[in-house]
Amino acid sequence: MASIKYDHVWKRFGDFAALKDLTLDIADQEFLVLVGPSGCGKTTALRCLAGLEEVTDGAIMIGDRVVNDVPPKDRDIAMVFQSYALYPHMSVYDNMAFGLKLRKTPKAEIDRRVKEAAEMLHIGHLLDRKPKALSGGQRQRVALGRAIVRHPSVFLMDEPLSNLDAKLRVQTRAEISKLHQRLKTTFIYVTHDQTEAMTMGTRIAVMRDGVLQQLDTPQNLYDHPANMFVAGFIGSPSMNFFEATLVRGDGQVLVDFGPFQLPVPPSRVDAIADHIGMPIFFGIRPEDIHDSHYVPRGVDESARLMTVVNVVEPLGSEVYAYVENGGREMVARLDPRTKARTGETFEVIIDMTKMHIFDRDTERALI
Ligand code: ATP
View 1 (spheres, protein in one colour):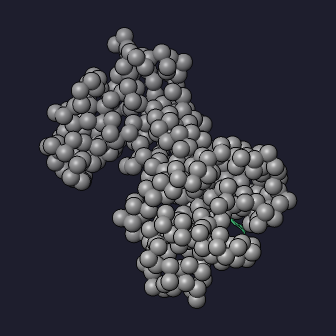
View 2 (view 1 turned 90 degrees about the vertical axis):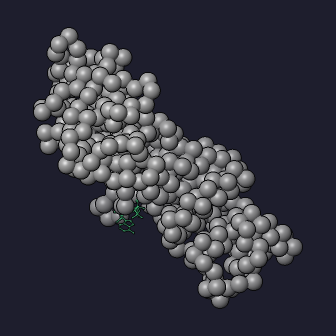
View 3 (view 1 turned 180 degrees about the vertical axis):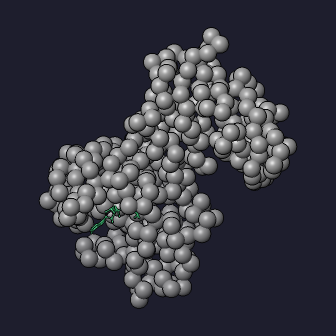
């Protein structure tokens, strides 16, 4: 069993706390992604699990064993780093075999495992080459292969794709997901890239300043972010946020933005009833703002807003338009047929059934 538990873990470097009371349960065979901006403590969390850093307080468990005092080599963990850290003077084969040789694994077994991993990673034809004769993507596979041959019960990966170009990154991302399905072991994967997190993780832990913000499935993080930080971090372009107040008017509930007001659909009134009269942050994702000429079927059209278009970014399959009303700018992801043109007025429909409401002080999601 390679379930993992961080139990109220603190890691301090002098006065600075890089991990603050991190509690996290990771199931056996899960693909957990740790994501957050640079410096939020992702790498530190991995290094504590691998035994490369000592925790200051709290406990880390692998299975039902507390590993705080277990040396790294006895934790049955393999770690793949952003820098591949291959031995330049050794062939690919020897790079992959090295750890097993140190452990005095029989030669035939080493050979079997190296060839099996090479086949999985499609690098069988490269086994005699030295790292300098490999592309970045191939080197990354060798680094993965070196971890795979050890048959660890936990794989830790720290930004393993960040040295690859965009296309290769997408391809390797899918291969790592396949590898996880094939190896059936626990993967913990660190990235600052929310797309990587969303596409790879069975669950995602979002961190900020050493504090876990939310642990959830990709879809739940997207649909029900716990606070404004998660809401803004997950999704690209980011969710639009505005200061607003919930008010009653004309027999309905309205979101009052100052220069304009938008009606709350009856289906969502109950959820926000307790917050009427309160200042809030209103959030709406770019895909929930539509060109009034191309509104997807089923979308409630009662929240209409005249805007001026500041910028139009055509991407082929969709168009991003930055539009504003009364100094409130928002980005909308529009149907590619849109007639939105820079400098012109433009009517959008805001799908208020998809709105997010956050407490103005705590920034926690209210609905
Ligand atoms: P990145 O994506 O940039 O790698 P990260 O989320 O992985 O960031 P960490 O490397 O875990 O962040 O670092 C978290 C914080 O702890 C940072 O502010 C960093 O400067 C600090 N830190 C990490 N290692 C040490 C150390 N050995 N001594 C002092 N501070 C450290």
